[in-house]
Image (cartoon, rainbow, N blue to C red; front, top):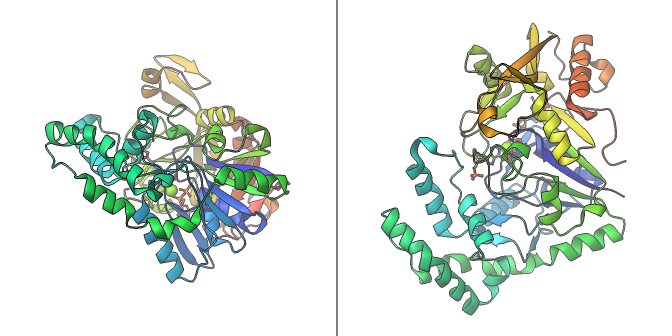
Amino acid sequence: MPAVVVLGAQWGDEGKGKATDQLGSRVDYVVKFNGGNNAGHTVVIDGEKYALHLLPSGILSPGVTPVIGNGVVIDLEVLFRELDALIARGVDVSRLLVSANAHVIAPYHRTIDRVTERFLGKRKIGTTGRGIGPAYADKISRVGIRVQDLFDEHILTQKVEGALDQKNHLLVKVFNRRAMTVEETVEELLANAERLRPMVVDAALVLNEALDAGKNVLFEAGQATMLDVDHGTYPFVTSSSATAGGACTGSGVGPTRIDRVVGVIKAYTTRVGEGPFPTELLDDSGEWLRQRGGEFGTTTGRPRRCGWYDAVVARYSSRVNGLTDLVLTKLDTLTGLATIPVCVAYEVDGVRHAEMPYDQSQFHHAVPVYEEFEGWQEDISGARRFEDLPPAAQRYVLALEEISGTRISAIGVGPGREATISRFDLLD
Ligand code: GDP
Ligand code: IMO
Ligand code: MG
């Protein structure tokens, strides 16, 4: 019985929410293992749209136990706002479990995130401003607040005091902001503690016991490989491990127990925020993709930067994640193009690179080498078998499969749950 990781193979927003939701009826647990409410995962069920930020997409499937793992950073106010909105729409959220070791986003993390960006000016990352980076920084610096700390006011107060000792110097002396008091911070953190308490568990124990009992567990990543703090386009990344290894460290399930690693990848590429993006289109083609694909951020509403499919990125993702499968999404968005360029290599200062250059400066200067594929004009949104696709669309998919290093097991042809062509079963 499988443990399957579903992650983003590009710069995010590949359609991880839809891919997770689709397996929802066949899995027992869906675990979010990294990130926080910087994510925006969209799921469309019977024409109804749900945008999930902090909660695992599996929460929409009756029968699934959603789990927030230790690798996540939790903004408690956002958590309960999101839960209440789902309850109001009739979703049963009563099975949600939260790791006692997950870290909490405190009010000062949000403030520091926003003022740091302002101070960086032209060098900013373009963060979502949710306090994600500062919360992870505190975790690594060993001054973070964990979920379990919320249930001992004495310890919580001590930890907040320790954190604010440093933070207030930064806020007041460097950023010219007002100091935060220990009392107001503790009060805000405790506001939802009692409501949270019944959900808190040793999530690693629960998940390992579930696997022992032959249950299916799906690990749903936030963000994506190219935003991973180690393997992404540092420093233009998020602050967590969004690659396959993060599923283990962020949940307490060992690598020997993982059966499949599925990379979700768009039939073209998008990116939100700053940082290098070799196939980015700053012309009409980019605008065409943005409008056709509805490429506006689920979390911040920002227009997404758009470009052609980058097979160098796909191969890199296949490698650093050990991908077993790809789910190719939004093939329908490309309908209507006469030809479709695909980046097969980069050229840097006249030298051809078949693989990602390890030197970030070279990546910043990478010029895509394109191969052109024939487009198709037929509406493909009703296709449910590979053979239903027009021959040119079939050839495009098979070409991507060949140059991306991993088999394409499913193809998305629309946002709805049903709009998918399955080639190989992801849970087999
Ligand atoms: P995530 O962050 O990876 O879960 O992706 P987002 O939800 O941020 O962005 C993906 C967008 O594409 C959402 O609006 C989805 O509803 C939509 N989507 C996902 N798969 C497909 C597909 O195959 N075709 C089309 N047209 N839309 C899709
Ligand atoms: P999902 O899960 C796309 C980007 C931000 C910024 C950088 C750092 O929906 O794919 P952060 O607030 O995390 O410190 O911002 O990462 N980013 C995302 N881009 N999709 C996401 O999530 C993202 N989460 C963060 O735009 O460039
Ligand atoms: Mg998203």
